[in-house]
Structure formats: structure tokens, C-alpha cells
Length: 418
Ligand code: SF4
Image (cartoon, rainbow, N blue to C red; front, side):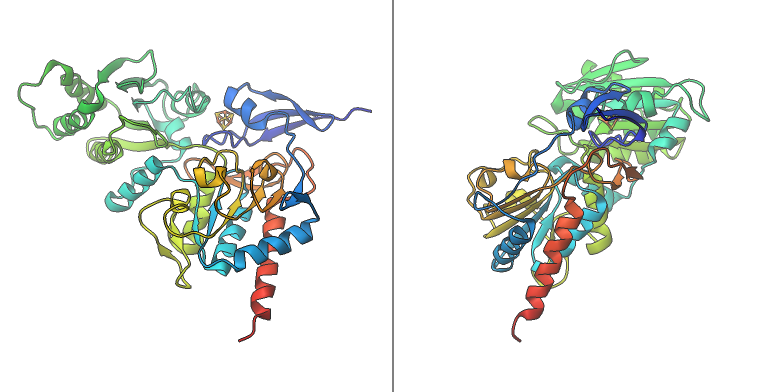
């Protein structure tokens, strides 16, 4: 008889929106339907099937033997690196950090360079953030800066920034700014376009206008900046929306600094919050867990026996440059892209969803995916924790497997003479 189940209020980690209102139909051990429809969610969930292999040096083995081999490889390294990759529950992320501590390793999540830049700016200047719920219920003016959320965050508008029902606003007004190829959404009450080289000047002109300073004669292409400032002052609560994961050439690294300064300035005459769109897979959870356990959200080193911030290159970038001689990837290896991984140059242990897909891994243990096979907690882009459901069965959870590795590492450490 075919199994047919309908699960309600399922949380999706397909992007950082963390929508927790999905209905999922499971039939014959596969995900058959998702609603409401979202193309990114459809891709992230797939039909829920993932591999279930356990391999050591390419040979199938038991989980106990694979974990022993992983512990031997990692504890024998001088400079191990632990990468907390996507699609883990926060409990599994915490255990991966404890593994890094036990190994005196470097540990990092998969925070993108642009998101990392935003965090460092916020540490320097302070934050001007709000929960997505507050934006939904209070923002009567939304400024989209160089992002149309519909592309990578498909339901951000309908659930938050352009939600039809809200407790404190009846209507909203939209200002859309495009920068080069980074287009803002249409239609909007006011739309402007700047070239990438004009972006920082445009932000400075908006800030000057908000301060009540009239800029002198402006070139025609920058004149819309004055109109944007004047329009923003008509709002009671302004959400400034940008893509914290914007990558690639042509993006000005000072964009996030300028947007944060603008948002803080708006908090004089009105109320404003910066809404930073983040990718999914519980990346925000990894940053939260690192902060609880080490004091830093990324790029942490335990090499000296205590956590300290290792400024500079992110975890994956360090593989080829800092003498890393062993690697543990905890999480989904699929989104990682680094030549050292592809070529198998560094002896690697992979514990997570689709681990066996990583060519050249010395130890690969496939686990379920957080929010599809493994229940727990995941974090939305605004750092609100959400429950994750187990929809399908998988023989192994990442948290339990990493916990097994941690206990073997501790046992080996206790057994060491001296
Ligand atoms: S918007 Fe993001 S979190 Fe929401 S359903 Fe789509 S992919 Fe999932």
C-alpha cells in the first residue's frame, strides 16, 4: 500500500527567508508536492532522496569504522580545518564546532565574502536591523537597493516587505534603485538607475539631503538621489532591502557601509531598518552557533587552545594557502566550490548530505538533510530560530554522526600518554 502523508507548517531552508508555512505531500517515501509554489524551494527539497553511503578510501564500510578512520586522519593532522557547510541543524553545527575545538582546528562557516563584509561593518558602526515580522507589520516605505528579491528569495515580498496583511500599515510605497545589472523590482513609485561607479556618490548625496544639506549642481545621472531622500522622508517606517550575498565583479564593497549609514541616519527623522537578504541552508545558524561557542561569527581558530578571530581569508580560501593538512566538511558539500576540494589535494573527511558525491574524500558519510530528514532548529536570515521537521527517513543524522566522531576524538585524547 502506498504511503501518502500531508505535513503542514513545514520550514524551508531553500533561502534565508525560512518560510515556515509550507505544506508537503509525501508519497512512497518521496516528496511529491509542495505548496505554496516556490521555484527555489522546489529545487532545494527535490523529491527528498539523497545517497546513504559510507565510504573509506572508496570502499563501503560501517559508520563505526568510518568514524574511527576519520578520527585517526583528523587527529593526526598538524593544521586541520573544519568547514561548517549548509544543510545542518544548529545542534549539528554546535557539535562540529566542538569537534574543531577538540582538534585545535580552524573553523569557519560558508559565510560569503559580501555577507562577512556586512557583519564587520555592523560590528564597527552598530546595527540597524529588525525582524522580518516587524518589517512586514510596520514598514510603510520600502527601498530596494540593487536587488529584486523575487529572483533568489522568491517569497520575501509576499511574506514580508510587500505582505498584503499587516498589523500597523494599510498600504506601502516602494522605491526601487538599480545599480548596473543589479536591478531593483518593478513597478515602483520611484525608480532610479545608477552606474556601479556612481553608487557610493549616490548614497552620499542621499545622506547629505537627509541631513538637510542641499548638494550643489549635480550631474543629471545623480539628481535622482535627491528625490530618493525626499521620498524616504515621507515614510514612517522604512525598510532598506539589499542582497547581503551579492557576489561578483562590479559591486562596490562600500555599498553595505553606505546602506547601513543611510539606515542609521533615517532613524533620526523616522524609523528605519536594514533588511539584509541571506542565503539558506541555515548559514545564519552557523554564524549564531559560532558566536555562542567562540565569541566570533566566522573565521575562528582554536590553534592556540582557545578561540580567536583569524582575520583574512575565509575557511575554504585558507585551504591552499595556510598549510591546512586535513579537512573536515560538516554539511552539504554540493555548494562548496574550491579547487583543493575538487582535486582532492587535502585529505578530507565529509560528514553530511551527499558526502559521497565528493570525489577524492578519504572518508565520506552520507547523512540526511536538516529540515528534510533531520528535525531540529534552523535560523532565518533575521536570526529568528525556527523548528525543522523530519519529513522522510534516513539511516543517519548529521548531529548523531558528528557526536560519534567527537566522542571518538575525546577517547583518543584521553588515551594519549602524558
Ligand atoms: S522563499 Fe526561500 S524559504 Fe521561502 S519557500 Fe522559497 S526558497 Fe523556501
